[in-house]
Length: 118
Image (cartoon, rainbow, N blue to C red; front, side, top):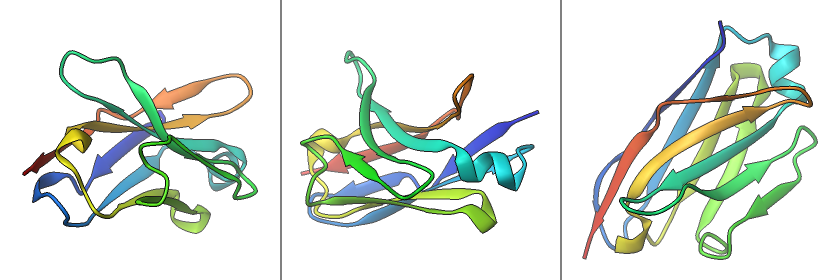
């Protein structure tokens, strides 16, 4: 059974940095390596939105709100995807979830809460 487990969330002050982790379990290394991994977030009362994604060959895509502040990366040997978040803002407050997508199916983690106070 594929599971994605996020960690690293917390309560931060504006301007601080935070690194999120997402580990895939129950998924083969080869499947993880060919998957597109994404970080999404959902703030209270808002729809879930894509924050950043990274393809199997390392191509990255960022939401405008994340460009220049967030960096997504992956370690296929550890079945892990990271989200480095710098210069945090109160509007970054949300539940951050990771997604593993293949051509035929995708999986979601339960998320980790990030709260940024001003």
